[in-house]
Amino acid sequence: MITFYPSDPSGPSIGHTHMTKFLRIGVHQSNVSGYTSKAWWVRRVGSTVFLKWGAVEVHGVGDGRKIYWTLPPRAKTIRCGTVQRAKDYARTAIVRRRSHRYEPLAGNIAIGRRPANRGAELEQALATILFVDIVRSTENAARLGDSRWTQVMNHYYAAVRRELKTLRGKEVVTTGDGLLATFDAPVSGVRCATAIREAVRTLGLEIRVGLHAGEYKVSGADVVGLAFHVGARVAAKARAGEVLVSSAVKNLMSQSGIRFKDRGVHRLKGVPQRWHLYRVEP
Figure 1 (cartoon, rainbow, N blue to C red):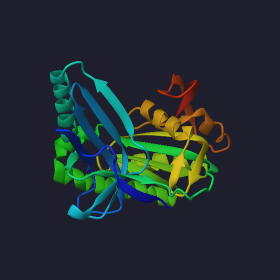
Figure 2 (figure 1 turned 90 degrees about the horizontal axis):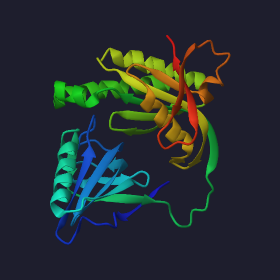
Figure 3 (figure 1 turned 90 degrees about the vertical axis):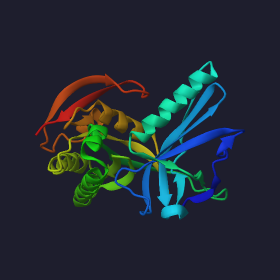
């Protein structure tokens, strides 16, 4: 269980510098509670711009909702040299958020921390990790409009979760239009990926999927490990409609009857070594 502590210690402002925060809305609206999404905040101090972003949990509805980082957010500092350049950078960052289906946040984003007296060690787990992401989601949202896109996303997540349930996948987190899940067996993960691909095509959507098998650590609702980063980078290499797997997945499926096509050896951003990737064939 995660205990939520008071809000972000950076606070809403420094001096007279305003901090702008955004929540990715996607399928979720302000009258829905208990979902995961993605948040950004942008702050300028003099000629420096500070960015912070990551997955969040939303609890409560309307004005009473509270938003918590699910994991420590990523952060970036941009030193622009002059105040005017920093203002221009911050203004562009804010406009970009607004055009990518984010809503402004008035309140703070709180930090979720474990109780200090919790001494349980992380448990090691082995699973096949699936990342799925919608191709050209921003363009589709702009073309369809907010109301229609919200309906499409509702159907999208319903289809994804239906296939996860059928093949016993465990949903870990959703971020905007992406989803992360784990499977005990690699063959279930691959079959789920191809089933999701076909199901969402009826909605006029194409997805890209990446799968990797590896160890990670679990403690309560928290999961952590390089395997998740590898899976995300494999998905990033996939083309529209493509299901890519790492060699770790393929090597576990020699008796599955599923066919693969060699997609070569790749460098995965931020991940050590080179990785051999394979495309799942129809």
